[in-house]
Length: 152
View (cartoon, helix red, strand yellow):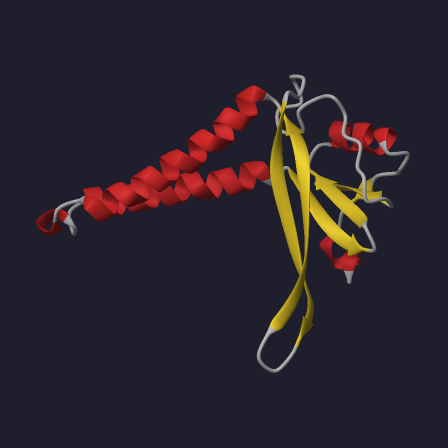
């Protein structure tokens, strides 16, 4: 279950713990981005993009970077396998393993998701009840169970 914390301000105050492991103090920042379609015309679309920097501990930041580089390395390695071995077991294994690492990284980083509501307001969605409570307390907000259908 996910929990949403609506923040009615363009500045967000985060708790002093890492939102990903909830065990260590934060020492670094990781940039997260959310884009939303604001209009569409005959030949182009317009988007609204919000970029937030989330606090992250050193261990979780190195985990995020390691998953990214390992996934990319495995996919690139599959492309570099000599031609006669392309259909062998190695190439598809490397591609699938690399894509699995990248998919796991996306899922893991989605523990905290910023959603733009407009006019500088955000909805920060987290899978952790404790972190939602701490985030709501830090921003004088409330938290509630998040259902995607409530955004429409």
